[in-house]
Amino acid sequence: MADPGDPRDEPWIRALPPAVRGPVLAFADPHPPGARARAQLAAEAVIELVAGWATGEGGEVRPESVGRSGAQGDAGAGALPSAVADLVSHLHSVGQTTLHQPGVGNMLQVVLADDPLEGDPPAIAGRLRERYEAATATMTAASETMARAGSALLRDGDTILVHDFADRSTQAVVRQAAADGKHLTVVATACRSRRTDGLRVARESAEVGHQAIVVTDAGVGWAVFSMDLRLCLIGADAILPDGTVLTSPGALTIALVGQRRGIPVYAVTDLWKFMASLSPELLALNEVEDPDGVPEALDWAAAGYGFRNPLIDIVPGETLRGLITEAGIIGPATAGDEARRRYGIGA
Image 1 (cartoon, helix red, strand yellow):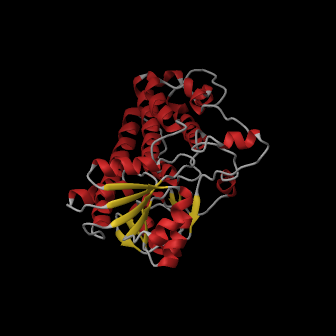
Image 2 (tube, rainbow, N blue to C red):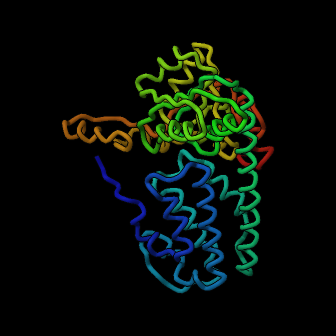
Image 3 (tube, rainbow, N blue to C red):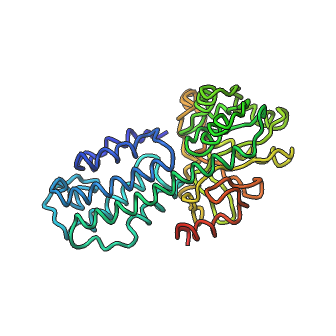
């Protein structure tokens, strides 16, 4: 079982100017913030690189020094497009990668917007920052809309199941319900898997006044079938054109049992997470023997057993009642058209 080490120790990160290094380190953290926060950190890193070029702080970076060799050299405005392209390339591969988080690429696509990155660096940085701030504003508004739409589905006294912690999507619904005076019983899945935190769902639900129950991952099917749930909420790392959702492992069980039992299952997600297709490289990530979240897997490996601890579940859109998005509650199969209409992504 390979140990990739801490990605934050890679030489190309150490070679970055401090203003760029900060967001890159947060982005590369083995346990980073959510998909949306990673998209914002990536954009911030690129903008800081351009801004540093304008002030001279970027003078220690050239395309080679952004790369893995860590080589240094002179840098000028003419080298900026190559340096930005190199940084973007490395962001897509560092840490947990962005193969399952298309929101990173979508954000960078909108912020860079085929900008030639030529001419006056302060003007370039200003253009990028303006696009970034506009995109961030839509994300903030999306969270508020999703929270209201999700809360509107709930009544005081309902029991719901929430799978994995997603601060600005599923948990935003939980907070909004509390603000609307609805006291819920929140069944939080333990969600012991890679880059997940089910217990945080329980903790933060209790903090806003709800009753919290944690169910083991093995008991998730039983919970959906037997606990008289009003609905189930899952998050999303990505949405495919047919409404298929890529999200934390365990969600597929929830969706299938919910469909069978007649319990509505909604994915709460903004449309920045649209992805055109699944890649073989993404599917291969589920085969990696990563013990994150399941430390006893190291004992299994020591005993000579292989193990699987998938990064994502692939949940068919047809198993979901709907997507709770900034466009309201929509049919899963309409997500691609809506993402293109709103943001010009996914074309």
